[in-house]
Image (cartoon, rainbow, N blue to C red; front, side, top):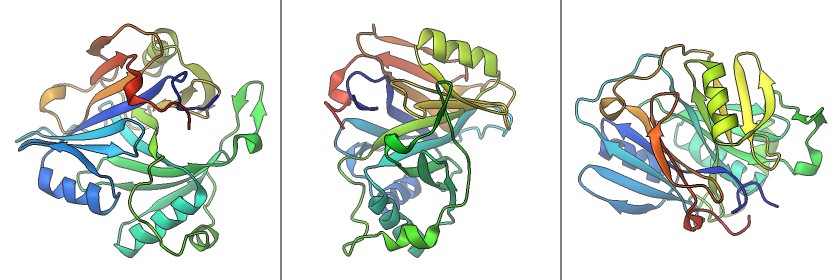
Length: 269
C-alpha cells in the first residue's frame, strides 16, 4: 500500500489567493517548474506531477493580508520521487538566488523557502520507509542539518528539468487557532491517525505515513477572518475513499472540500 494511492486520505488540490498573479505565475513556473493546466484573467491552475494533484493561484484585488497570529498556511509540501530530484532542485533554485533553508527530519530531507507573497513552500524527498524509526506507534522525527554538499552531489547530469511526473502534494502544514479543536476535526471527522507530536504541534496521517496534515500554534491563536478577500490559503480539497462529498469552512477559517473522486489520485505510487 502506498501513502498517496486511492486507499489513502490525502490533499489533492490547494488554492492560494494572491495579489499579483503574473509575478506569482512566473515564480511557480520558473522556480518550481510546474506546468499550467488551465488559466484565465484572474487565475491559474498548475499540475503537480501527472497524478491528479493541482494548485490554483486566484488573484484577489486589494486582498487583505492576514496577521501572523491568524490561522492558515504554514507551508505547502511537494514530494519529489527521490533524493536525486531533490539535489537537482536545490542546485537549480540556489542558482536562481532563492533563499533556502533545510531540515533533515529522519524520515525525509526537506528544503524550505517562501514564494514572493510569503506563502511557505517545502520541497522534500522521503527516506525509504524501512529506515523510519518508531516508538509506540509514533514515528520519530527531528530537525537536523541537511548535508547540502552530499545532496547536491547526487544531482543528475541533466539537472532539474521541471517538476517530475511522479511529484505530488506530499502533505500540508497548517497554522491553527486552537490545537484541540483542529485535532478533533482532522482525527475524528476526517479520520486521520495521530502519528507524531512536537510542542504545540500535531502530525497526522493515514496508512502510517509520517504526515499528510500537520497543525501548529507556534505563531497563531485566532481563526482567519474574511477568507474570500484574504491573501494566502483559501481552499483545500481532500480525498477520502468512499466519503460523501462535503464543502464547509474548516476550523482554521478556510474552505475545505472532502471528496472521493479517484481521478485526482494515483493508482499507486
